[in-house]
Amino acid sequence: MRRFTFTSEDLDSIRHERYHHPHPRVQQKMEVLWLKSQGFTHQDIARLADVSRRSVQRYLDEFAEGGLERVRCLPWPGKANELARHQASLEDYFLEHPPRSAREAQAAIEERTGIRRGLTQVRAFLKNVSAWVGVRSVPSRPRPTPTSKPSS
Image (cartoon, rainbow, N blue to C red):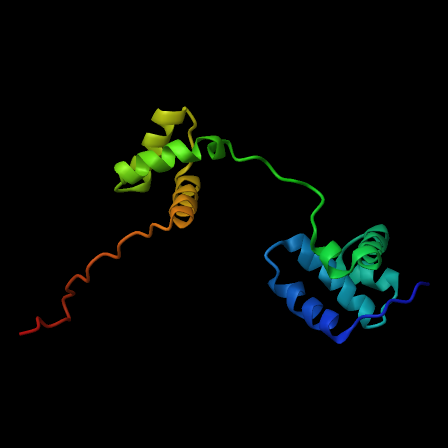
């Protein structure tokens, strides 16, 4: 059986990321590393982390090869965003014609590019574009509520 040495910084990162990393697969890998640091056998780690023994070995190999940075890497690239090709033209259009709603933006994107996206994807795209440009939406003015009193 191989011996692994975990530094205190590694253990702090593992302890935190096994619950708080944004990707569930990395959380699972960190759980395996945590159980290994606690002295469990590969069979027990596989049972407790609900992975195969081969996965336990693979995650430990990743740690041995490149430390936590290697464990955090995911081996698949993901899908390319089709709207990325049109980002510049859409950005220019939305700067000149700011949409009043996500539905209006959705219609403009489909009309200008031929790509139909759901409202959640349109909102994410608009947020990405506005953050990239440095444009933030203006907060709406406070509206009176039935319990608020008018100021004199």
